[in-house]
Length: 331
Image (tube, rainbow, N blue to C red; front, side):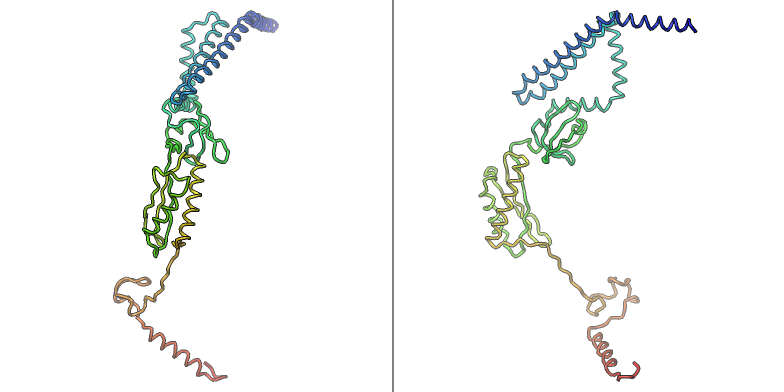
């Protein structure tokens, strides 16, 4: 028992002595790694500043800056390890990284997928920082495009973090991709109103608005004959095509349409429904041998018809019998 404790104590002493022997190397390795780490951050900032004034190269600068930062940090890690462990060779590090890379690839597959998708988004630029996009049920301003995820700020001041792989493999609507955007609004007029007159009135009302562009010019088109209205579509263009401009121009267009229709006597009817009742047991109710609502087809299954006159006669006889009874007599 004493021999085992003695061996254990010797082992602990050797580990402590080895640690103190390596302590200067560890301190030097930490200093070297810290230098490379700060150098990587500085190089990233230099690359981003060199491309921040060029819109086309801005995202490319972000990608190159991050890649340069990662490479320099990796080189600093290699040098720090060789300082701590002088017997460690570069081939051993490469082999270790190869084995570790496969394991990390399986363990962090989703993270690597988002990383590659983020790089492709930054390089292809389907949208940029500051654009207003719509993705599934989310809509807002693009705040930042990172290598893992993209953050958007909604119009009600909330932050949404979307994985880059989702954005890269699904449809995204970019509302601010171009400098102008066409808007539309449907107006329902009455069937008694003249369509050409209504189109002229609506077009003149929209053309007078400052929020509506004169080029391209707005237009008004007859859309459909609906159940209780004749629908007319009003289309106009706005610039810039941002959400606030969309809402404000729509507000002004609706007010102008309502006012113009009221001033020119154009009806804006609400939905109406007409219900007709008829008795399908009347003799005049079409071919009674065909299938009707309430009974099956066939001459032998058609119920006895009645006329309005016979029905009135039966009702009169019933009333007469009721009125002819004397008080105290049994009905």
